[in-house]
Length: 246
Image (cartoon, rainbow, N blue to C red; front, side):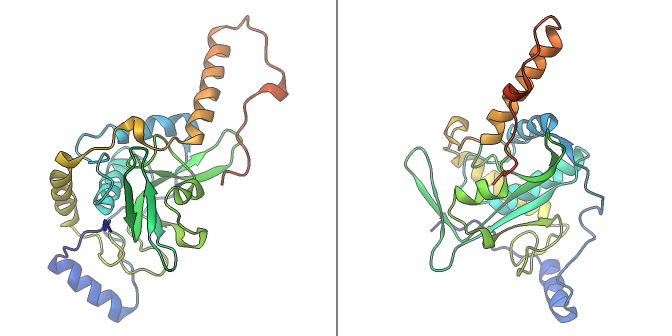
């Protein structure tokens, strides 16, 4: 079984783990900035995903291991871009593992998986947290779509603010490790190890249903904007996103 975690723990992580346990807080908020969620427009959400997926220092093409490091580096980058990211967590079902069947025939099993997430304002005005996981998908997806691809039960899927542990867990970097000022170095070291091992091509990743819908919306909007003489489409023909995004 491929384990999507990093077993290394710094002395500061060990200290805070013990302190959190004794104090019963289970949280540390001094690593990531505390900011109010700022949803991004759905069209910008696609651009952000592509910018993140193009980061050459993250081994998205080696999904077997390193998800904690990838998620950490994505969250860091999203903050630098002025966004307000979260993390999406998935944990194995009872009596089994998370299982991903790649298009190239390879199967990967994890006991947990994590990726970045962003609040996105959908075309209907509804704000939805979407998962950003270029190691699996070619675009943003809902938590349910993400979990379905690896067989995670709904009850084992959740979002958590950056710097906050997932429900029932201790750590926010891994399920047992806190983010510390050494985490950047640990994540970068992991990626240096995994970058040469990449084997999953972008075209082999799962297709994001939302990406196709959004691209159609953007294409229609572009045509209307650049061809004012074109007759407007009847309301019933306008492409819309289903309200049930699961």
